Image 1 (cartoon, one colour):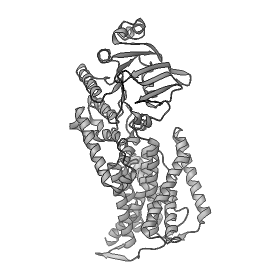
Image 2 (cartoon, helix red, strand yellow; image 1 turned 90 degrees about the horizontal axis):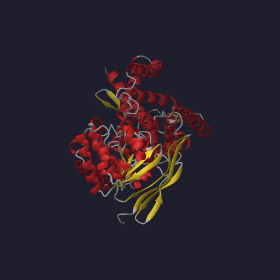
Image 3 (tube, each protein chain N blue to C red; image 1 turned 120 degrees about the horizontal axis):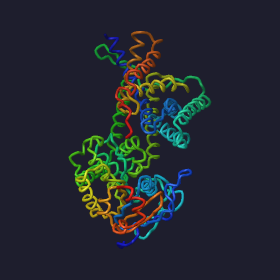
Image 4 (cartoon, rainbow over the protein chains, first blue to last red; image 1 turned 180 degrees about the vertical axis):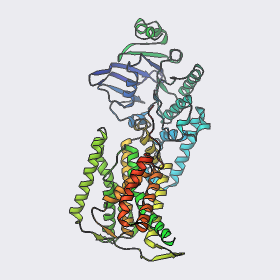
Length: 262
Length: 292
């Protein structure tokens, strides 16, 4: 796959809830390996875009195509678990870990579907079962080490600090072996120091797992620093897209967004 | 003192049956927040499958027990698929009423097909009491208790260690997040019904072993009591259902022996009222989780 190939194409996506159109006629492409920011005022429809990409909502209109190797396949309307299995993972704006499970189990669950031992092996405790479970635990531990969570692996997820929870969400998403990672406000509620660490972490995982990343974020300094391309949504419509430089100087963006923010 | 200990033994045997049924209630509740009122009837079907396997088909006990778990498991999945899944997005009251409907349907079909007359469950194990220092424990009681404990240990392993179990726990906490981790939530819900129903089916055979009389409405009362056990232990909690079932069995057998059998049911359900007043989340239940 060449560097410039589109890995994901969204064509005229529209999402209506009754009379309310949350996203209207939105088209965009993600290139392989790209880090794209998705910004916009609150309620602009950013998370709705994520929900359509991951299958939580089926778009009212439009299609989403995923390119894998040579084949292009429509994923709009598939159930979330199938889309995850095809290689799109996400984190949540309001952290949604499995609070009553240990840190390690949170990650192991996400590893599970990719290691296919059948129910037969669970019931009869075959050697394959033990081998696979051991491998999953080893992989999960390695991933936790990468995200500096190894020491907390036996704690319940709910007992983590806020920054740790955000990192665990990323670990859990990575465990599904994604090609595309959708990060929904990963820096929300972090102090400048933590945000700094987060941006290093994003660069690290992007490199290590050769990810394409779509990032929703309100922290402009982070977006401007990390992203190669930025898309701006307002009232469900794309009002601008381009390099951080271009976005900074776009009059429409400043009117709709940056002007109001400060 | 001898009588007291004797009743504890009887209570444990009965309680382990309640525990098996209660597990199905608690697992289904844990995963889709539904009190599956048809669950007691699945237990009845288990007893009948065991009965036919042992008498009509003359199968060995082990095979009959497996069949009496397998067929209810399939039935449980079928009920979920046909009656509950289409209502997944409906208000919970709609599903609850459907569950009552399913329960009545199964009971009446059973009356139609199996006739309402009680049948004697074949006695495979010699009803010979073994004497342990003056406490009489019958072989059926031992079989029932050991089988139940083995099943509960197996269930615990399944839930704690395997990917199905972890997926179940994930789905029960956050369905949407679970599906975004690549888990087919519908399949996991279906499996939860299968496992819960298989345990109820096993309980049906167990009850046939110690109280050898089965009939189509036999599931109603034990179903309700197992439900109370699940609430007692903390609904949604698997160890809670086991504990609740044992407490229920012990209470019943002690009340029967020390007070009077006419008080048995009143006290069993009185227990529900007390627990709802004192600790609504049950003995091992966690207080309702707050949404952030």
